[in-house]
Image 1 (cartoon, helix red, strand yellow):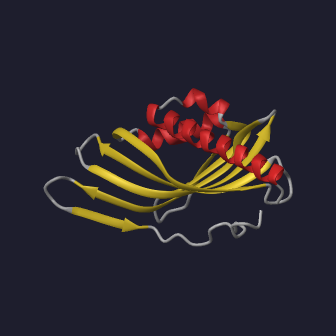
Image 2 (cartoon, one colour):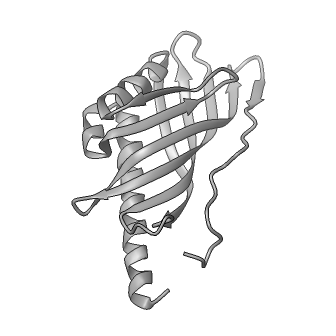
Image 3 (cartoon, one colour):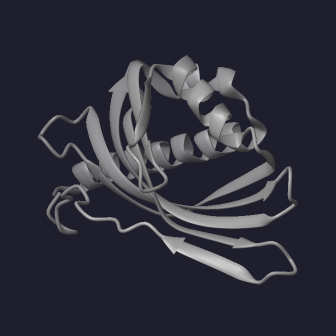
Length: 173
């Protein structure tokens, strides 16, 4: 990789990181209308949070509505990015990128006041459109859900995550 190619990648990585930050900020504020600036019009989201079948949505408005349904039983949700591994142009197209993004969520259940912590992973596909990076496809899998009601201790369920998408080894992009 040349210095120029490396600099271009670092700028793309920075811009995709800003996309992650904008997404987390919009989710924390339930600002679903901002999704139209973050997702391609045909973007897809798939969510697997339990042993049942994953659910999905297509398009920024439907994606916001799906996430809103997940948040309805909660007083609040606070989401943070733990780590992201971003790979530019995995198929040779400089206007695409992929990433594996680990997140932490802290939430409170409205009916019980129970506090819940979860850790999950997004497997993302991005597309650069008119110079801006947007989400093209996201697949979320919850890895851990821990609940503490304050008086009864905690319970933890772990969703077995297998089949992560292939990302090239560092230094090979």
